[in-house]
Length: 264
Ligand code: SF4
Image: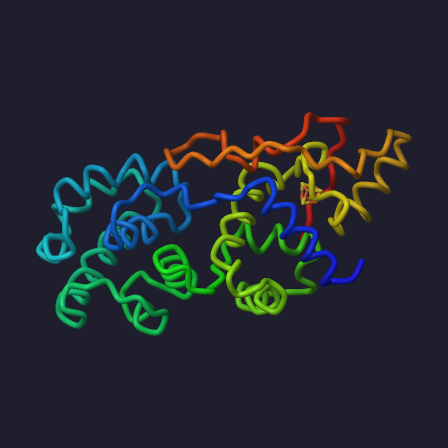
């Protein structure tokens, strides 16, 4: 299978089975999305969604957040990873947005990355979610899943993964492809033991067709059927922490108990 054929299969499969993939962070406007994405670094969306309502209630606008002191904001963020840095970043971000951008959250990657706590990945998330700009945010799931399937080859950094993905994913699908791959990594192609038995991407997956198949053959277990294309079309839930995403619903029942080796 060529790289293009692999991409075509994967995109077709996701379009058919997860047509409405979107972020699981709960937000109402660009300001809230930016706060949530900054908080989500090294933290689950579920935890972030438990934390943001209190923040948005107390600081409903970026102007309000710019007036917060460290001691006021920190208790609201305490339960999230790296609360010290994130408290400083949120206040710094809000001050800069107010002073340099007239209180408007900027909509371009070069502008966004000037804000405290905002790197390339965060800026790509914000711009692709808000405006559907063709910017691919590469987090740990996108990095791992892309390599396993064979969408990327030998990528050593998130930037290399981003560049390789952008070469093959049509511009108008980049914004949703980011969510497809993240949800797949979160619920099916998980880090330790990918659920290949539940995965409809097997026919195109490099890892399955090399590592997993060999293991099954060595253990004389039946190969998993490669033709499975289940027809679930549920929309992923936006609410926090639900594992009932379309990615999961699109999965097929487990066919064999095999534990593929970890990648990397
Ligand atoms: S077949 Fe297995 S390794 Fe490949 S994408 Fe699916 S879950 Fe991941």
